[in-house]
Length: 147
Image (cartoon, rainbow, N blue to C red):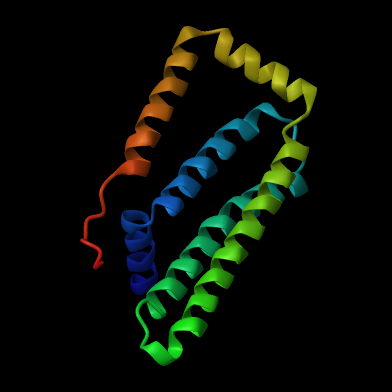
């Protein structure tokens, strides 16, 4: 468990795309409350939002494992990195399609509008979330990456 937590911490600290995934995950989880999702739909959304960062961590692991191979293994290493990145892309596209289908309910959209436009503090909270997310996503790595 300790190594797993260390890997997650490392991924968050060093991988901008993982930080984007985490911000999006929290955004989805917060906005789920405005929709009348049944248990299966909720489970699907939670699963998908966990799978994307998991795929991102696996991609990072592949990238680290084949970072700078010798000349003989350069092409297979590049192929492995590209394939892992492709898996993340496919999962992300699938998640966006699922979210688009599930979050286009008119009643949920109406409730979102009422929530944000009915109280100025909610708009301020959204603005603060966006600003904090920007700084979280763009923060510097705590370790210097070798070039």
